Image (tube, rainbow, N blue to C red):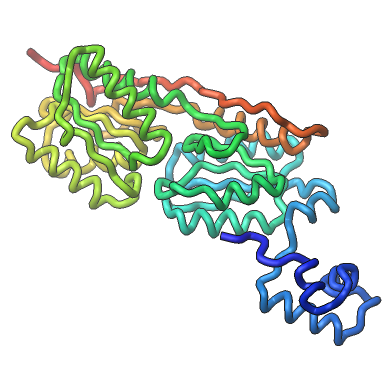
Length: 345
């Protein structure tokens, strides 16, 4: 997608005018005749001209605004991240504008495009589950817009990144199930293309390997919409329950997948953990109030937001070009509750 379809120079060349004349006409300067202004504005609108937001910010100084892109604020993890970002940004005198992708690549591109034309000083983003191509971000980065990734990241852009220790989170959750007497551990997770899926799956696999356990491929279920489509989770769960060697435990890896799996198991009348144990990723403050209380991997979301905002502001306010970048990994915590009570032998 082209975020800068035509430039002032393109308009000047097409209309055989000077760059200065076109620039003044677009700014409605009194120095330019109404006839010329009309000619320039109509051509600009017809050819989708939009001013370069980064160039504008450089002319005006910092706009004191940063953009945030997340999947959905319904997810308590992301709402906590945003709180962390705001705590740092507001203290530094910056405003925040946040948008939701609802796990849609198309919406992500659209939102990034719209944010970029608010003359932002920088962008914080956690990629949608559908995102495989980040050309829309590469173009802005090449034009000088500071970008920091958090949670779901890409290594195709050389910049700061903030993540949780997803490998350890996946490892600890799986090892806890093994230590509690479970050996047939299924895994319901997000699409295989996103960074958090790969890291948590790697932790799950390593814990099984270290315990000398193997599970059939059909024990691993990927939900292409990351839990947004309840039907996908339901299908994955039904397929697991229909297996001849039915799992005795399930490890889930997102807020939505975790809480939906718990709801579906309860609806089916399956006793947790007597029939199937459940451990999952969730930052909900209600984990203790669920039925049964849910063993969960907790991510330091607020701290992630704070750190991502600090790193972005450092890029924005640096007086020299930044050439060295850092990936900060924050620790996860496993909170053990009744959904994974030790199995009776």
